[in-house]
Image 1 (spheres, rainbow, N blue to C red):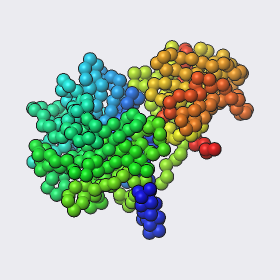
Image 2: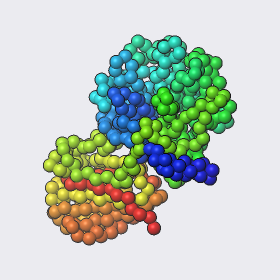
Image 3: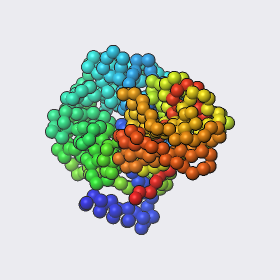
Image 4: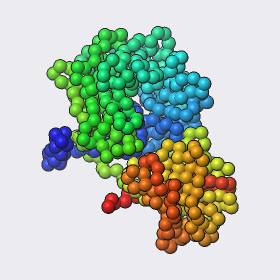
Amino acid sequence: MRSALRAAAFVAAALALAAPTFTNPVIRGDYPDPTVLQARGAFYASATSGSWAPLFPIFRSTDLVTWHQVGSLLRRAPAWGIGRFWAPELSFQGGRYVAYFSASRRGGRPCIGVLTAARPEGPWRDRGRAACPPGGAIDAAPVRDRDGSRWLLWKALGTGGAIHAQRLGAGGLRVRGPALTLVRPDRGWEQGVTEGPSLVAHDGLLYLFYAGGHCCRPPCTYAEGVARAPSLAGPWHKAPSNPILRGGEAFRCPGHGTLVDLGARGLFLLHHAYVAGDVAQARRQPVLTPIAFGPDAWPVVETPPPAALAPLGIAAPAPAPGFADGFPGVALRAGWEWPFDRPPAARVASGALTLRCAGATAVVARQVPLDRYAAVATVDAGATRAGASPGLAVSAGTSLRGVELGGGSARAFTVSRAGASAGPPVPVGHGGRVRLLVSVAPGGGLTTWVAGGDGPFAQVPAGRAGHGPVPTRVALTCRGAGTARFASLRVRPVAGP
């Protein structure tokens, strides 16, 4: 309650003085392990993409708090990577941009990959693996020691794994030589985990921020700690007040971020956290937290703020609560995703998206950072080829639940690792445009609807599709054979009861 009262008092005082403020999260959606780089008069951020492609979305901002997606690091997975892609880290070295990332590996434990580009927006070139010890390495962070030498921080895979530092070669693309051990999990709150390193120099010392606890399953216990040393070689001492950043009334389980040093404007940590109302812990959202130093030279921070003074003095507008896409241009806009191992055969032209089924479920999806919303897809049924079942669904991981067309009828459907199922058909008629609607309630409840042309919506029995895990995405789908043609997709928030 005290932190909530302090936050409310702060916002009231700031508004009274007309001081520009921003609200957290600064990027809405499930974007864990955020990284940020200041370059070319702007800020660039990326985050974990999991099993979705394009891999590692790229966001751009001019004020550190208002972000727009401008692309991605990779459209396709590298040949050596499989399954999961997480914890990217952006940097600028030797006149080029370098990005490190963690990935599951075919036939072995996870490794750290590396990419290069002439511009932060890309295109990015896959340069193989930067670090791949036998036991596995994740969570890379390129740093400079106080003598100017370049190193790569990484976390040894598994519970009990320490954070290490290893020298980078002249090109910054491979580690070489022995690794130094910086910190390992030896405190109770860390629960066997020290990960997500980020380093900053301050008043002659190096400060290593790191995350500990459990990040990704209810109930989470994630928090952020810090250690300091005169150089990478140590000795490293952890702050007696660790964890210095922990959850509060607005956000839960904060951690794993990148430090942004704005000099006289202050030090900030862009990290992820769950919004307090996200009881299912479905979205780890990027949050910006100011960092100060106390009289004892240790960083001081309480909990992630719901609102704070804008770091560059620029007020941040409220983000749009929904989105609409009528498929202009000749390609999908930034923000569309698909399963990394099933790139869709999709074509955008003449204000429509054509999606080929090709015998398997084709999927293109968008993140929806809302707990209660309605999504409406308009299908050009007359241009959909026989054998194709165009659909509108929500997604949680690899599962799909929604409503689709087929044989002049609409039906609810599910797709998961266990297989596919479909409910009873509701007649719609043939030809013309058909609207599909899914309505999502907090907790993941789903209702499904269909309307022919501009007519009223009729409810489609959801059956098994009506219940499932909390979704993070809305998807356009095509099952069967042939092609489906979509004219638009609209997502809007829905008021609660």
